[in-house]
Amino acid sequence: NPYDSSMEKEEVEIKTETQFLSEKCRNQLKGIIPLWRQYRSELSKADVYPVGEEPSGRAMTGFVAYLGNKAHVIVFRETTERESFVFDPEIAFSSAKLIKSNANIDFSIDNGRLTVKFDKMRSYAWFIIE
Image (cartoon, rainbow, N blue to C red; front, side, top):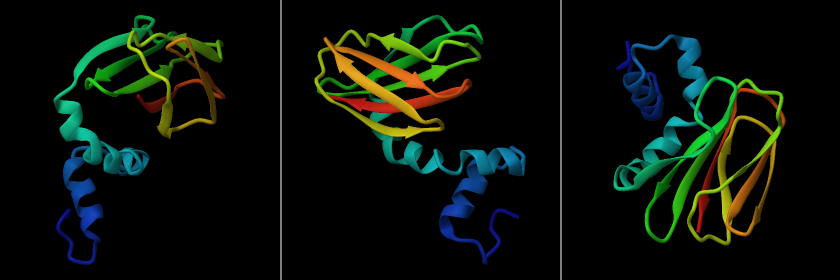
């Protein structure tokens, strides 16, 4: 029951938003749902476009949510042996802040491009660039 009074408010909200998922899936999403809530209003106002390679299951892919003076960049390493990729969000930026990742990553900025190195396959990294 998602409305069990012994549960914390955040746990109830997470369970309600994910009520049709298994307990395992809910546990995997626990860390990202509060971030989604924090940024969903501004993300809903963003112009979103793809970055990297076309998703194929073996690509380095992602998307940019452009907000004028900043953007959210979420990139993925699918099932590929390549560890790093240079993503070009095609906007001018000089700083990148890592918001969340499910891997250990290294990243750098060079000439408006974001190079990301992932330590494992099937991983992601969420940045805010300005």
